[in-house]
Image (cartoon, rainbow, N blue to C red; front, side, top):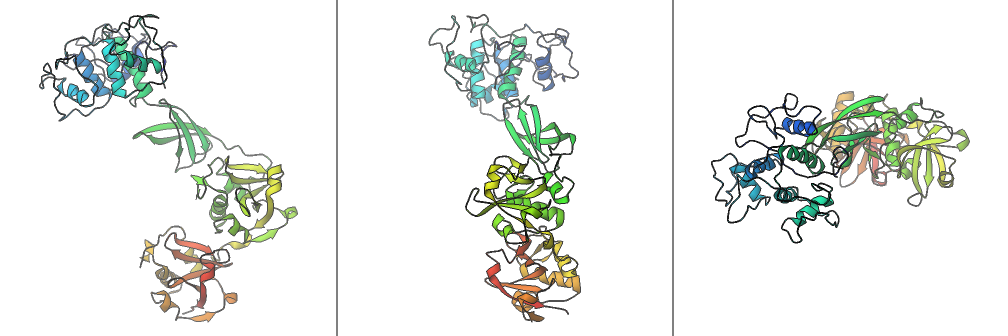
Length: 523
């Protein structure tokens, strides 16, 4: 992305700025005052910005001296500073006129090692010679590794065909970084002056470097996401751990290893005719704009069933199965004529055969769902597409965990919060049977054996039809896996992949068939 200054094409796209033969103390931009560069001066802003970054300095008398020329040694130091090159302990460059004790030697060495400078021939760098526009063209292209953007024809009559620098000029011209001293002359052998040097180094760095990188603008796309457009042309979406609130928000974001402050205005576009005060509907609307990500179930990305599961868990403490077809198998079937806000509408044959999509009914014929094309959004049931795919309605009011039971209540506090740990006996990490042992001890003061096969030998065996919350359900895989029955075919247990979790035995194709038996332990 090229940067234009005062509406005209850049005369010269240099990455450099100027210092004296003996570098002076840099002046911060908010304190710098160069008498020869007043605020209304054409060069004021770039010179001040470069001074703020300690790239340019003034002379002993405090002036910047806009029209002064630049030596190749000065240019070398500024290139190295601007590109933040490592200059310590760099192998020596082979130039006979670069004394390693001089202030510019480390910079010349670094530039040579990076292939940015080659010298003037015969192992001479030309430290005290002024830098020409052609020489700086080559340094610019090499320093930023610029490539020809598009084939161009140079308008300069003073640039000979086959000149050593012509390819560099074409690259810069294709990036809109240079034009001529006049419409038809480039003046390749003309020395660069300090003012133009500062102006054009600032503009080129803004276009192709990171030193002056800024946020051009930012926009909230959900309470948990903002998009920032940077001055280097990058447009990125950032996940936010702290959700945005209505109105103006400022958040810190990281880009290219630096922290930037982004300020955005946030407002949810909620239809006025839906039941936005209903707890489940409000819970779903909170995530409007969150992008669709298949297989995800967090505020940073949802698929349809992931959103439904997350909202019911967050708002009602109801743990639904993960997939749409599994969610369809639980709850109460409701006729469309009796639908209420908070019910879940299901659709078939969307991206695959069978039950494949759902959303939370919000009233007035609308529902909140995670759309593949729009992310979390509000849609109308009476649209031709959703009418064709509509399958039915489910109500999940009766699926709360039976937390009035002390064993279920004790177990439920660890759901989603504690990982699996082989042999783990504490809330830092649980093994499968150790979790049951811990819960019974804490909730009822009952000491159970440690292992699942030993726990099976304790208590009264009961049928599946007689299960009550707090009973121990045993699931047979390679060994007996105990779980706490929580009501409505749901169990709280520990799995290797999810830690403490809830599983619906009616819908789980993995755990459901592994039902082995159940025990009731009262003492």
